[in-house]
Length: 496
Image 1 (cartoon, helix red, strand yellow):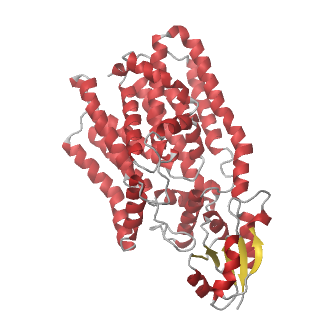
Image 2: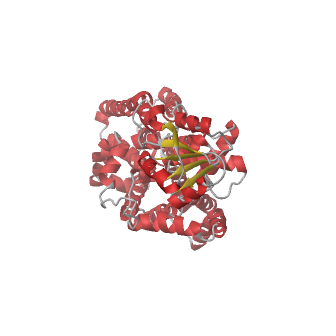
Image 3: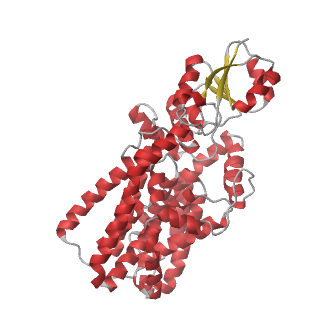
């Protein structure tokens, strides 16, 4: 069960390393975190949901500025963003992204602490650096998305399960594991249990043949019941409340469409990917550290996997989660984020095991590790000052929203017709109305008073014919940008 004995780390380096790691983490995840506007639909929805919670005091069901319930995700990430926004007075891009950035840093520190205890300080350093600088982990950790907080919750749950199963105050560690799993469910839904549960079971099964009888991890029936009870107590009440509050609509939309249909590939709007998608996509997401994959092969061929329990745990973590995710028809690279802590742990152990077996290569191994780390870090100044500003410019909606509100100041409602621009909605602010059918638009424009309607330009020619109203263009998205917009939009004015 014990890992290979790590080589000693000089005391001066041991004192300097944590400082350098913390400085690198701060730069990677917090530098210019709020400098660019919200970009993706996920970010704008998160900011809307969180800001509306602050504005209305209704923290139960995530709801967009147009009053439509947002049933794609449970509310925990929005609660965290709203709490950050409350400290700052408003849900800004920085506040919306802060829970993800903090989760990324906490996940790195958690991996470091676990690996240090189970595999030694050198393996801990390698694992922490691998996780902290993996390109996709950094990218999503700087984005207002749920995937990195989910990775943190899954990581905490599995590490606590590991400790509990090895007899370290079992009940407390199992309760902590279930608490983290319950938080993961409140972040992403039942898929969190589909990630944690199979890894835990597969690891217990592997250790029955890989560990001596007196060192095998165990899960008693009582502790299993404790875990189920804690998860149900943490996540169950909100899901039950959301089901009854929406008359079952939440269950239909969230569980059926966003879980079952995505898994089966039945949703027409979602792309279906082959079973091997996560192989090459995961390697790209983990770069530059995927270049260390040959050391994983060495770890199995040399028998190192039998010596290091932490290595086996990381390998089971990676393999089982990738298999679970690959079984789903709809796949995204972001879904791999909970795999990354396990991959980092396994790579950290493999690197140190290989170096322990070949101490004559130490200086060359250190140089190679330093080069890979430098390459991983060198990408981000380019991202901060070139790629991210260019991407933000293509999606910019703030000037267009300002032009619309100059014509239709709040509390006048703006109608968004056949466009799902969550970023525009965020900058417009409430009140908003979202319509899809021509009959609904005609009825809305027949109400007394001036009206502002935002729609794609291809619908403008038909708008007057279907509604019977004179519509005058007052703002154009393209005229407010310095680049070609991702999706053109125009604002029209109608008076009775």
